[in-house]
Length: 380
Image (tube, rainbow, N blue to C red; front, side, top):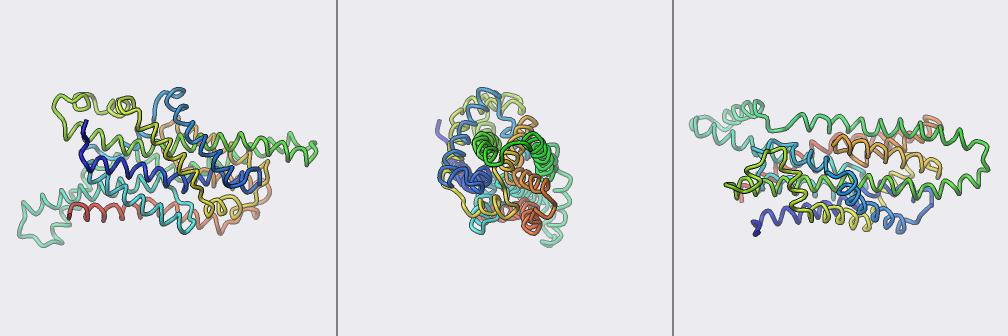
């Protein structure tokens, strides 16, 4: 099957984004194990990369489906998805990811991608509405046409809110869940370890941290690689339904069944998506490791086990629910949780508030960049 050039470019860009996501976000899964000196940064990225990739086999053959990818593909009404929309969203996501990586800001690659997709789709709908208004009212000024176009936009179901609202809520719920679970796990471990020899216990927790970091990296791969799958899936499904159409199997089946069919029809997409994020992880991301592992609070091996296990539990829970979350937010909340078990002042709230601002602005900034990219794409 010969794909159009733009679809090939989209697939390539999505995998590039996945790779960037690896060295941008996967630093989160090695931050605590590096800061506790259980592994060197190089050893840690290899360990995390391995489990990022193993997540493919876990999703495909243990869970048996890719719920998060399905959610991402359906965040936008399919009537407003085009290859140009997806291309613009990816460009915006890559630009914001690279910018935040360069400055060492642990923003969310997940929300960057979602924001880009939503922003480009909304601009596409606005352009359609503006052209329709201009056709009916050619004598109106640009401002008058824009007012009518915006009023029409707000009546349309461009964004699938039943998919997007849980994603927005979990910007805050994921770190809170991670924090609460982390506090509980830490208190349980401390209670059962209080009579242990401190040195022996510390060495034991370092061994356990290999397991807990592997769990978190597995959850990270399970969560983040699927987002790229969702974007590629949306593009491929658009190609089948709108560019081939007719009796094509995608065009004739129910909309709800298309993504699951895509993941079996194009099984190489999930495989390559998980591989790309693993390779990205191997590229490292030391700036963000430093912020996550040492600047929020000092972390011991015991606390590293608690934070990583709590983060992993949160990621497995959200995967079960099919809600894309940020691994950055999740591990941040978990690290704050272990800090709170010592004392409130153990958490460096200045750093935490800065991270919170980065989280809040990621989706709107990505959306604006994607909207502008879309205007540039259609102007070419």
